Image 1 (cartoon, rainbow, N blue to C red):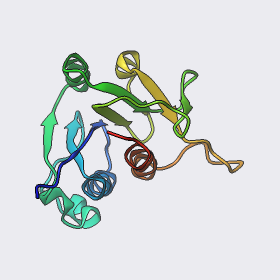
Image 2 (cartoon, rainbow, N blue to C red):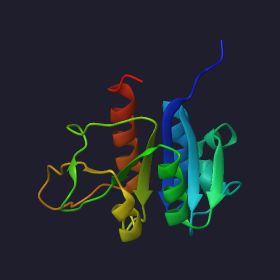
Image 3 (spheres, rainbow, N blue to C red):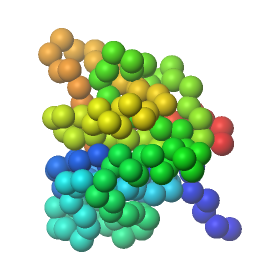
Length: 158
């Protein structure tokens, strides 16, 4: 029996850390997402820093590099994808209370700058993870991406 992929695609919007990219590859393979798009300044396999944290998952995940993330999001939206961005924003909602539609794109942004404003303007839903501590304002992008993608996939009926 063929292992059907989940109707979820990840777009990495200018993520600079190769280790974060590798960790996202590992999570994407573990959750059986359909594809990863690397955009802008994202490094691409084969890179030892990606492989080290991906533990080989980059060899099994379908991925593609697209320089312009805004054009990519426009094309995916036009193809019928529901665009979700993980970002701290005045319009963001708790990721556990969000209503997701499929097929879905989850956009994860730059470690310091977040998801670009141009992409946020194209986004159908902005989600955030509530911070419970008193100092940290956000989680590492690979950690946040893992939490959100697991929530989307494990608690949705496709």
